[in-house]
Length: 421
Ligand code: AMP
Ligand code: GLY
Image (cartoon, rainbow, N blue to C red; front, side, top):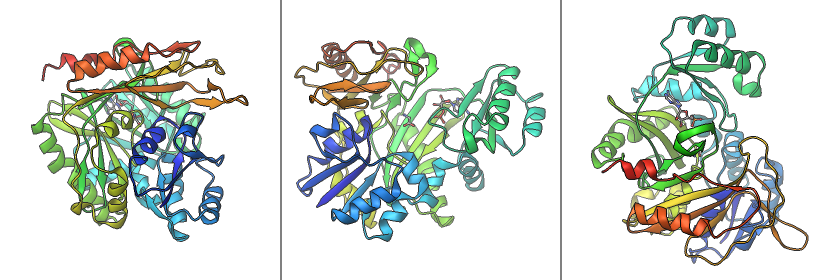
């Protein structure tokens, strides 16, 4: 089979490395891929949002199966377009990807079907939103409706922060049309858990749970980033919590999507908060998380391509999806200054190591030398029987990698190890 993976970050590199283990795949392409992915798949310089380019490439090269990994092409309808030309896909159609593409849609879905989430109001004009935040409980959370490169959520600790967020999003349009509507919601507290799940619309199989570390600096300080590291499994996700999530959140969500005529096939990401009142949904994503994928897939024992085909054909119930009992830790090596200004173009030295190195932001120069090209550069994932060992190993290996301006958090896994469960 000829398979193409759309996207070009650390998540896509992880998916590609896992797909390479399948003997059903004869040729793997990445569109656009990156300088590191080039070692594991043929990279083709077509952007993830260039749906015409992607479809033409698929036709001209006889692609049998496509894995659409990032949110943008999914929300834009990449799967719909590829299916029209007979390419089988792993990923939801646009109508189902709206679960991530519109927070107003997902909040209204949860309300309609009684799925636990923060209470909220939707606003279409700034004046009404500004009036609301004069008296609502504080802190409060302001969210742009549409995709905003992971930056559309503002936790307002003070009333004036909420006022500023409303001005920025609805009037100054810092996230463009994504800010035409906003959700203002209750601030929840509790440990956060990410659960990715395979679903064919009817059967849902949760993967091993994980924990992201979103802030740039140690002890969850500094700006929000795309994710500075992950661990799996997440110790706050106990068997009891998992059971409640399955009954109160996961199954009701796929049934709700089906009832709305938006059957979801692909990887559904549940961003959860374990509050005192039980698990609640913070957000849905219509795709694999990044960098959650970098710890979840290395623990997967079943052939990923076999699972993806079953998701596509609606036969997931027939696959025995297995994860190892061990743990994984991914330390992200970033460019100093990320998520704001940073320099790139530095040569990297990556020695042989036991950990897996997933490349997020690197390019090959004309001489074939791998150089930094992004804010998040590499993810170093170690697996081990226990989380403590995985954390130690990931840092030991990450510290052997050299490039100028290298920066990483030193406390990935600390909170999980302190959980004591
Ligand atoms: P998102 O961009 O939707 O992933 O949100 C970013 C982060 O904001 C989440 O990981 C949470 O830490 C936080 N967050 C979002 N919604 C809430 C909420 N209702 N209460 C508390 N924290 C929240
Ligand atoms: N790690 C969070 C996300 O993928 O959205």
